[in-house]
Image (tube, rainbow, N blue to C red; front, side, top):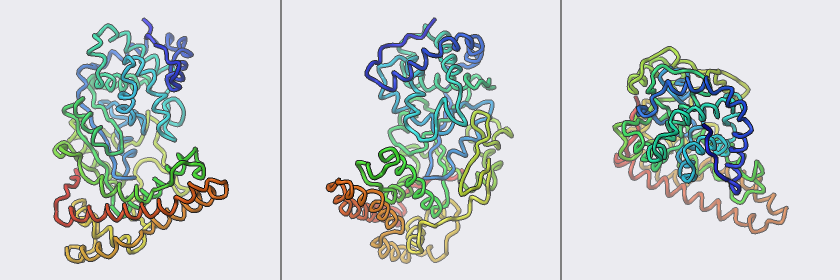
Length: 436
């Protein structure tokens, strides 16, 4: 039995994916028996347990997910490779589930800068993955189109195919699937629960001062790299990491709407300072047995090595939990303390006692929301230096002249966001994430 592959003459992603599959046909046949044995271990129809990991800015979501990699009763795809499952399914509804499975790695590879299926430190071999898809086709190919065509089935098949490709046979035939979209998305959360009614949500959180500071660095890096292929001067849009960072910390510190009972948060600091206690509690909440592998930070069995500021480490790094604020001046920090006072209290992060008085918080917000943040000033310099001046020199006059209007608009958007959030937070109407 061979997977039927249709015509894709106008779609570059499908052309690349199907060509790769055909190029590996001889290798697929050589792995056939091994992958059939691995695939048959899983009860796909019974795989109903799933959890999704989201993050409040750079707050350790990748580290948390990496702790699950070696657990015998867990299936997951590494890094960001599972994050495109739902948009991919919507975009390629017309494909059969088998074509979707073949095409997904090529689609996923277009979404992230440093996370690839078949290339990189934590990649898998393309022939092994395709052989696992072929094995799934041989086992389930005769099932009805109605059963095969649902989104849930694609999700389950993708995780089994990846696990069989590694290869590493897991313990439970109905394992927990860990899905890591990272970015908070209301529509995606609803789709996930439609597919897995018992699904759960894990959010990573961090000291609000540190997460805002780190978020600005991360978003700046991502936007700069994406802008016209690391050429911001040629981009069609201006960089706006300051607004994105403020929006992230103010909008993503709550559960998805209606999902409070199935949602828990884990602190970045606990992943580094007390990982065993945190993972024991998380394993119990998820309904899996605690195992020492939950303290090992790996992807596909290989150590997950972090690199930052000239230092490399794997797993917990308590030194990384120190509060940081290089992108925030004193006024910015006071504004964060006043605006997110309830976050500091609910999540057990240090804050000055003076912020317990609501009238002081009101006064601080009323004054400081008018002042541009240090991040906004840095953002302005970035736009002028990397985009407006180069555009002016290259003759893109209209693009260059829009820069002042863009920056004023971003300032007004931040002011509006802070004002609307202040009302809800000062009145106590904000529903925050609940730490585990």
